[in-house]
Image 1 (cartoon, rainbow, N blue to C red):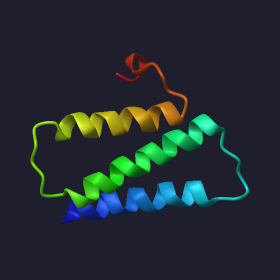
Image 2: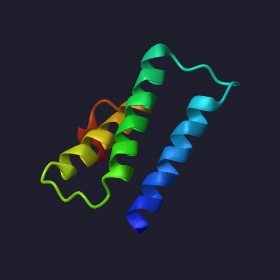
Image 3: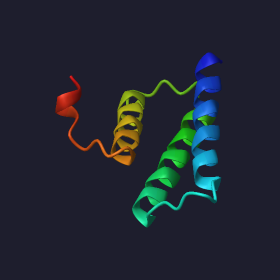
Image 4: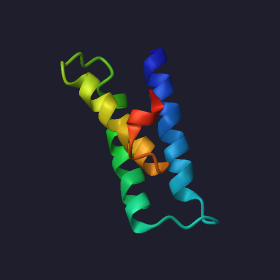
Length: 78
């Protein structure tokens, strides 16, 4: 349940970013945010799913967030 609440909070934040009219995203950034939102919705709907690729989905989502914030090379983060 706690996991679902955190995912739902992330969804709300991404929706808020997309809805802000005072900031114009590039088409690439907007597409990336929309893809992140789709993945978050899938994670929220499949909270009880314990499939082995769940870790890969979370990592993919994390990499998309990092890309959105301009971090393409993650080797410097570790």
